[in-house]
Length: 169
Image: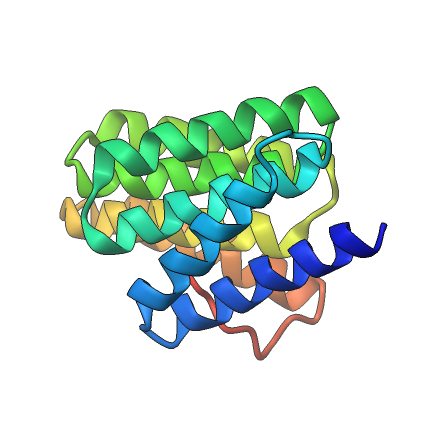
C-alpha cells in the first residue's frame, strides 16, 4: 500500500510539472512511474499514468502516441468500472481528434463524455464538454449552435452554483 501511495504521488508530481509547462521533467517522472508499474498490480494507477502520458503527448504534438496511451487508459478504466476517469479519457480523446482535425470523431467523443458524466452526476465534466462542443461550433462558424452549447453549460453552472470554475479544456 505504501508503494501505491508513493507511485500516486509521483503521478501527481508529474501532473504538476506538466501544468507548469515543464513537460520534459513531467514526462521523465511519468516514464519512471510506468516502469515501476510494469507488473500492473496497481492497474488503476497504471491507467492514470498512461492517461497522463497521453495528455503530455498531446501537449507535445505527438497525437498518435496520445491516442494510443489514452485509449489504453480508457480500456483499463472501463475494466475497473472507473466511469468518471473513463469519461475524462473520452473527453481527452475528443481534444486529440480536434487537434487532428477529425472533427466528427471529436464531437462524438465529447457527446459520449457528456453521457458518461451525466450518468455519474459529474456536473463539472458535463459543463466542460458542452464548452468543448461550443468551442468547436464557434470555430466552425456555427454561431447559433455554439451559443446553445455555451448556454447549456452556463445554465448548469448556475443551477449547481458553480460560478468560479477554471476550465482546463
